[in-house]
Length: 451
Image 1: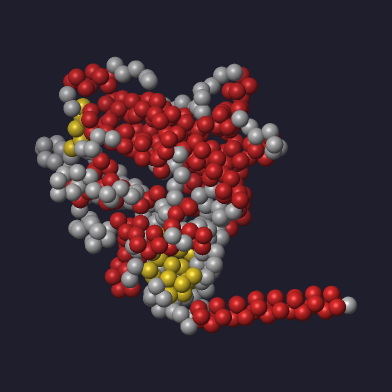
Image 2: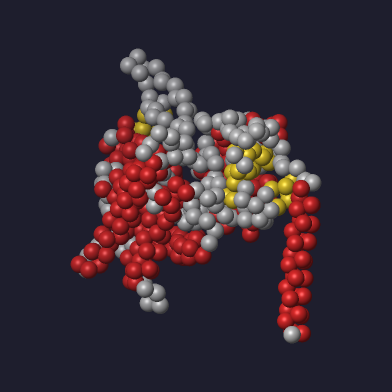
């Protein structure tokens, strides 16, 4: 009886302590304001304040009024916009234990895109897939893929020489070709490839599923079926090649050959499909001589490929600079605002690679590519992307002269730098002149043999 009374007393005390702790925390945070931002309306919050086109521009302007951290809410959902590198670093990196989750987005799982560890919540599933991907794309692993991306860059140079007017298609093909060859050992020469088509269509449908007016349930199921095909088709392609004793080396082939026997074959294969699939899906949207390094950095700064990093979410309440940030807040790193911070980059709309040079002409220390993200959610494929884009820039600029094209009267046609509005920012179609720097280079490109 005494032991029962003791257990009851202990349980009641523990509950009381927990309640007191919660009340103390509630009392402390309830007196703190949210970060500044536009005044919310009753029920809908800031629904009508949030722009539908190029929101990163509006949020950058808001920063001049409200500061580098801005709070809005829509139907009770808290949203925190980070407009400075300082705020992003202090929250997403130094407090990564709180800020590494993803917002709950039902459409991602309903359409089958929850295989992508870049979109799923911070969890064991995320850790396992990220760890496996990191093993093959860490910094010291990238040289193994050098023959692949150099071979594909050779194809790019040939394409630019033969049909320079199709430069956008050639660049898009390069991106897809490198990923498909690296992950699956699948060689493509044009963008009209069945695997590329599957990925483009699946990505397009994910975006469309978020738009009003679609037959949501049927659309989501159709998209899920398409995503399954996108993952399974190249996976089955590699397995069939292995059974036939044919095919090229690839990341997926190596994973299959080293299959973990402690887990069921089917379970392990699903993990491999997800890991290979995320790189495969990235192919549709992606594309060290010191003389080119400033240009490399300025290209990423001037027009970030991702004006917003993928949103983070908080897993606990937090206090930052005297402001209260609730658990479950969606956190939007505004890459555009950070890359156009006038205190760091004077005259930020001007394309000026020299801003990355010191007075003595040497590179400065500002080498962070903001579009790769922050903290535990930083892009795992950043080293591969870095190496590929770098090699492409150097190869193209070393072999071709790129200039404004001319009209029939010989007058140069001005290029207006207009970019598409969307999750991924890219230039809208434009014309330019691409010619080999001399006849020797023309012959070298013509006579190149594959590495």
